[in-house]
Image 1 (cartoon, one colour):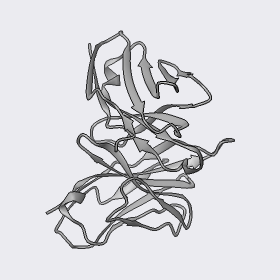
Image 2: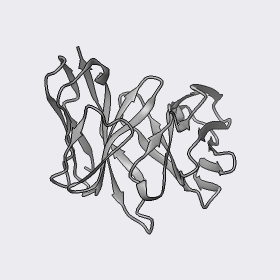
Image 3: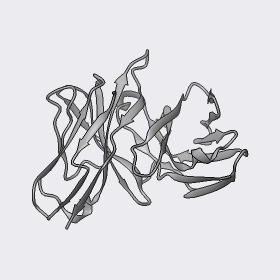
Image 4: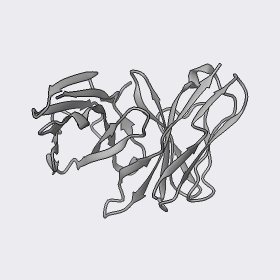
Length: 113
Length: 117
């Protein structure tokens, strides 16, 4: 049972526009969420995180939004750049099991010049 | 340079032949973890360790063993590999800091591509 789902396998965006990557979760116990980016032939790198006590967190061009009632989070990239082209994974953890992380399937983002 | 190293980077082996993939970090991180990446399934956590001698199962621990005898090393052991363990494996480490002690920014190794025939 996939508790964290990224239902869009891929997303294509024009340079300068907004990229919106989505993530849904089913386990209401999750209370901490993260986004990672992965380039081919490299390990993932951390982008941004959000606690369930917040509904928004910003870091430069990256903003994560959390809608707890809908069990949905999204990553906004504004403006999108060709170097943002990568696979994006969302991940979740909870409470006393905060060392255990559940990742989504990933979304391939392509930003066209 | 702060880094997570994995060895080997590529490995082709046969069913049933025990193997170990090593992972080492030089950042004095408390937390270490192993993941496998498979097409359509994303990253799945195999085992994690909150500190020396403290390990716990992730979502897909079957067929794997780990140990954490030293802070810097976290080897992944496949006692009897099978073809369904063919995958891309990543080791990661993180500092457990801040008031929450949450696993936040994990540093990942470059990956080990394992093929079991």
